[in-house]
Image 1 (cartoon, chains in turn cyan, orange):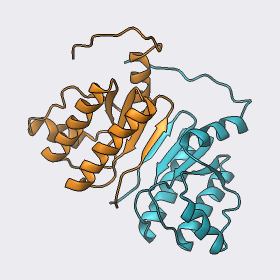
Image 2 (image 1 turned 135 degrees about the horizontal axis):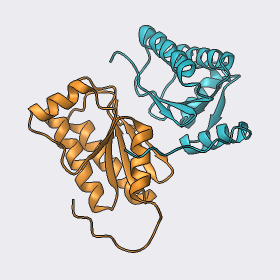
Image 3 (image 1 turned 135 degrees about the vertical axis):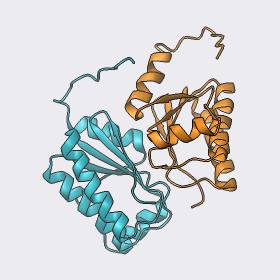
Image 4 (image 1 turned 180 degrees about the horizontal axis):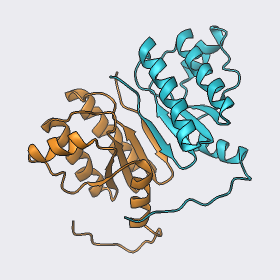
Length: 129
Length: 129
């Protein structure tokens, strides 16, 4: 796999991580994501890790990087779908994911992001083909 | 990888296919997806294939299967993010994905699904696709 797809959903971007991130894939993801935030003016980034049963410190670092970079571009990061074992591992590794919001699933993550930007109440236009 | 995550987004389910489907993974996906449609009462299934640069007839068959199964459970299937080369290949393989809607990206796919079910009415529609 060359790159992880980034889906635009309204004001937010959604990334589903399904494979272990190796160095180059992670760097490509960081770069793509920041470019997308810049290009689309997204206000939030949702990272779904429900497919991951383990994480390591590298993965934790990448998520932290993404959150920090997005934050500079005024987008908040929410990690969703974390498995219980992953939460345990993160804490044991000493990676509390500071600066990153978490939510149980994508729906709650989107609700969290939406709640944090109440003033931006532009309704989505449904374009009919 | 053991299974592809299925994300619930409101009335719809979203699946991002990032890896080549081999036999067992495809069967697991079919089964998981149908279970999720049943459990959540989802009205639509979005399959994002933007990460796939090639498809083969097996992949086409799996998408067709998912659409047919979902249809029986009253959920419509939309394939989104198809790369141009993939569209060419599908037609050349003689797999026009009948019974499957397509849209350029997830946003348009969701708009398409939303437009096809403007209100949750209990009246039974006879769809003749």
